[in-house]
Image (spheres, rainbow, N blue to C red):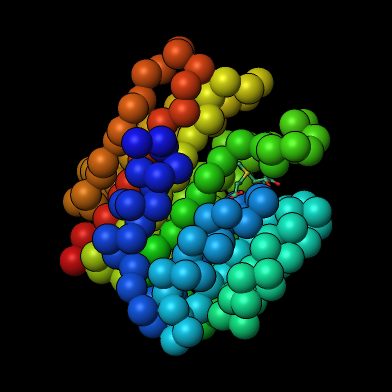
Length: 187
Ligand SMILES: C[S@@+](CC[C@H](N)C(=O)[O-])C[C@H]1O[C@@H](n2cnc3c(N)ncnc32)[C@H](O)[C@@H]1O
C-alpha cells in the first residue's frame, strides 16, 4: 500500500459522516477531496495552504466534484492553526492530515519547515477530540527533509510520553524515504 493510501486508511478510522476534518497542507487538493467525501454533506473540512496556487487548485478540484460547499479552503500558514480553526473544531476535531514537503509540480523551495510544522502538529493534537487522530506524512528526500522528519519524530515521542497512542510506519532515518506518523488522542 502506498503511504498516502495508508494515511487515508488510518484517517478513515476516525472520520465518518458529519465529522470535522482538517487538511493543514492542502497542496493539490487530493487529501482535502478525500476528507470531503468521508465527512459527507453534514460534515465540515477546513483546508489551509500557504500558497495561493495550492488553494486555487484545491478549490477547483472540490468544485469539480461538487463538494466545495462543505469545505473552507484558505491561504494561511498552519503555524497559526489554533487561531484559524472555527470555535466548534476546538477539542472536537475528528481527524487532521499534514502531508508535508513541497507542492508537486511547483516551486520546490516552498516547503514545510520544522518550526511551523511543530506548531501545526501541537495545535492539531490540541484540536482533536478524545479518540480523534492526526496523520502526518514526512518526506525526507529534499533539503531540510531529514531535519523536519527528526522534529516530527521528537513530537511523536512527546505524544507517547503524554499517553496518546503513537503509530510510526516505514521510518528509516537517513534513507531519504517518506514515512508516516499517526497519533490518536488519549480519551
Ligand atoms: C506535499 S504538499 C501537500 C499535498 C496535498 N495534501 C495534496 O493532497 O495534494 C505540501 C504543501 O504544504 C504547503 N505548505 C508549506 N508550508 C506551509 C505552511 N507553513 N502552512 C500551510 N501550508 C504549507 C505547500 O505549499 C504545499 O502545497
